[in-house]
Length: 302
Image (cartoon, rainbow, N blue to C red; front, top):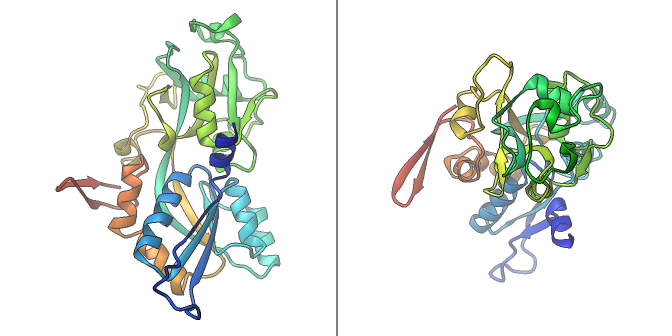
């Protein structure tokens, strides 16, 4: 549990200050906080970038999109990571603090719904997900969905979600639940990794998170927007071609138009080097890229 807690926060200080630099050398430290869904990519970006740029340090921490945006508004960080757009209240609050946030689209992601590997469910539609998660929804047991889950006592659905500071939580409410509140009794995972781990060991469970956290220990559900449509599982091609019904942009926000070392970092993220890191970790790039992998070329399109 302690390990999971550390991963949930992913409070990782990545600073490359080598002995080759004199004590009086000026270094740039970029503070970066926010989305847990983006954690894998952001940490890999920071590790790679600081290896290539000795004079730059990156402090990366999580807490969710809302936490990152609040830190940006309060002037605590240089960059906020978010898996959702800033809302009107946040924009107004930023203006009150003399900040005019600038949005940068740095990649794309899919929201996946996970169940236990033994769950025989073949597909779920948006209306069924509303029945499971939304206030007033009719599905509290798997039997009500005509599904019999092995090892699930009384077939009671164990709903797992994210805390309300999570951009994924906000996305699911707005885009799948039509703005409805999530049912009381839904377990709140502190991180995407924790959510997937909980679903993996709970036969009755269902949970939602970034597709980047899919593992062989869970089953990724095939999703359709309407019951009479074919379902799709998340995939890189489904994200880039916008065929998978639950895909979204990933953002980095800056307090002002990016300049100096922050701009150089964002430019690097949008380069083939940065975008290929997305592809290697089940996110989609913002454009077509060529990635060397064992001498070959890997291409992603948007």
